[in-house]
Image 1: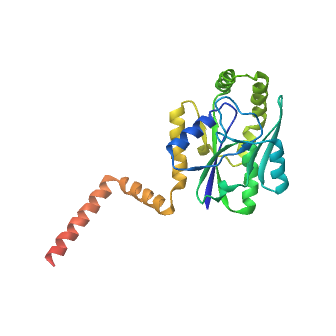
Image 2: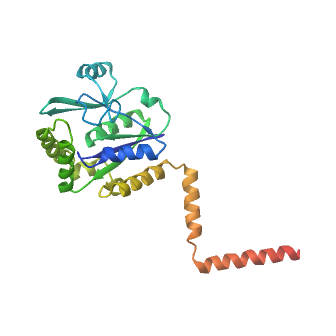
Image 3: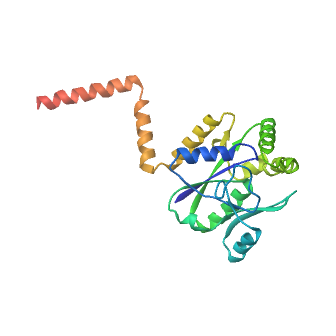
Length: 237
């Protein structure tokens, strides 16, 4: 079964930067979600979203092509974010994407019914004070900063990303990564993904090599002595 690695985190946690770094470092298919929100400075079509109209999103809902959708009442109006059943899902390989706890929860429900993909969570977190600093710096870099909308996102995230919610979705400690240093965090997440992409044979081989390397010295000595004695007896015959 193919795996769908879903990277999540509060606004300004650095998940988009980490996502872009992983795309450059790894041979992994990515899923590009859809949104109706305006494009920000530095963004382009398909990076990090497909930017579409509200009418197009509503049309997909009517056609039953929406896997999950989120609608947010912002100071700029209603913004929609969605995962669409498009051609991206035809790739018969693991995929990586960026989402939210809400989208992850909805997709868990969707794929539990279809049984076609295994969802693997990746949760990014940073201290709240650092997150607010990064959010303000990012917003001030925009051509038209929207401070009120930034404040709304920060507070909304604190309500949406509660510890109770995280734990209820089965996101364990090993799936949570502190983004205090970008390079370290990217390395840890890459290892996390690659470990889960190994075939059963590769995992067995790794465990076998590890077990052999960790045989106590006294046992290794006995094994070597037995091997040497066996060689001598064979030569006598």
